[in-house]
Structures are given as structure tokens and as C-alpha cells.
Length: 284
Image 1 (cartoon, rainbow, N blue to C red):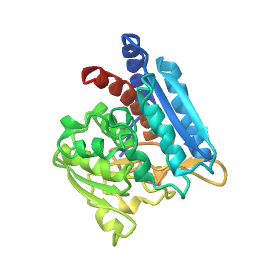
Image 2 (cartoon, rainbow, N blue to C red):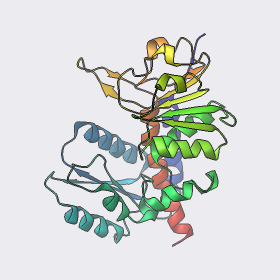
Image 3 (cartoon, rainbow, N blue to C red):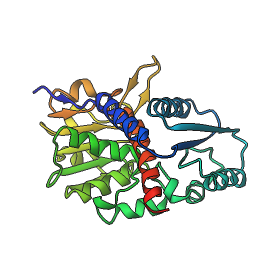
Image 4 (cartoon, rainbow, N blue to C red):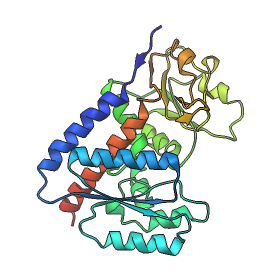
């Protein structure tokens, strides 16, 4: 069996081009502000990719870099000032934050209408209602769904297994799959006998950050595998949470790392930035 590679890079280019065309038709500018605290190398790369995508689409980009010594009170003051700034139509606090921050309180401070990361409780809560209310969904789960749609993969009735239960990927993608009538099992660090679950999956999504956690013997023949993990090895090579070389030999569809979900995350974030502006104009 030769797996079809789910090409997130090609689709992300298509989405960026579509957003650029729509931005041209906007009557007023779209502005994205990114708050970054400290010097996390992975976050720095991601922020630069966001800046590049903004430049390509005509979205005004502003990055606010704060030292790691920034206090909770100080970051909330910055968020409040951006909430009040009409030139900022979308806002992100780059995660992870240093350990002295209480992340829920930081995210809660963001105006839900400007929350293009989709992490505010208001936007997450809307997702639970139905897919029609996924107005500003978290970018990575939204990217997964869009990639499946692009390849004509209908998850209705599938046994879907999600490995990882973070608020950023695992939980929201589980909800989005339920919204599309998949039967969802969500696994995590405390799950007993992980392979017992993964071997039953028609659709397997892995987002834990452990290189090659999922091996060939843990995957059902013909399964669809979405690898969200991005792990840099000592030799500098990027690998996912799935042993791609061996698992791809038995799957029907699989995402590569790099070139799979990573580019989709950036593209959907930029699409969310446009969508936030459009919704602000609809409901001022």
C-alpha cells in the first residue's frame, strides 16, 4: 500500500493566496498584533512565519517583544491597550509563556472578537454547539479539518483517536471531529495501553511532542494518520510523533513532517485574522 501524502504546504499556499485576494477588497486595514515574551527559539520561528504570511497577504503585522521578566500585570496592561486600539483587529499571545504566568487569566483578557488564536473561553465554548459556530477555531485543529476536507475525507462514522489532550490541539480537534459525527477517543499521558486504542483508529491524530511515538505496529492498515508533532533531533532534522518511514507503508493517507500540519497552522491563523475583521464589521 502506498499512502497518499496530505500536502499541507501546497494547501497553505492556496489559502494564503485566497486571503490576499480578500484582503484587497477590505475597506479598511487589517492589523495583527503578536505579543511574544522571552526568547523561545521555536516560538521565534513561528512568529517570523506569521510576519511573513501577513506581508504576503497585505495584513499589517506588529510584534511586541517583551523580556522574560515581564509580570502578569504588565502583559495584561499591554493586552488591554491592544483591545482598545482600533488599528489592531486581531491579537495573539504567543504560547508557551514563561512559567510564572497563569495562562488562563492572560487569554481571558483578550477581546474575544480579536482572539485569532481561538483560545478564549468564549470562542472555544461556541465550538461545542456545532460546526456552524466554529467562527474562530484554534488554528491547528482548523488546519487539520481543512486538510481532510481538501482531500475529500469525510470523518462521519469513523473511529477517530486523538493522542494528546492539550487545550491547543487535542481537546479542540476532538470537539471538531464530534461536530462532524466521528466517534472520538481522546488519549493522553495517563491512558493505559495506548496501542490498544490507536490500532482501532480509522483516523489517528497525534499531538504530543514525542519523536516517533507511534510505530507501525500501533496503526491499523489503511488508517488515515495526521502527525501534528514537530520535534528537532540532535542532528537538526525535524521529525514528527509518528515513525513516518514505516507507518506510511500501511496507511491510506498520512501527513509529512515538515510540510504537513505546520504550514496549515500558519495559514489558518491568517485566515482567522481576516475572519475576525469580517465579523467585527458585521457586528460592531
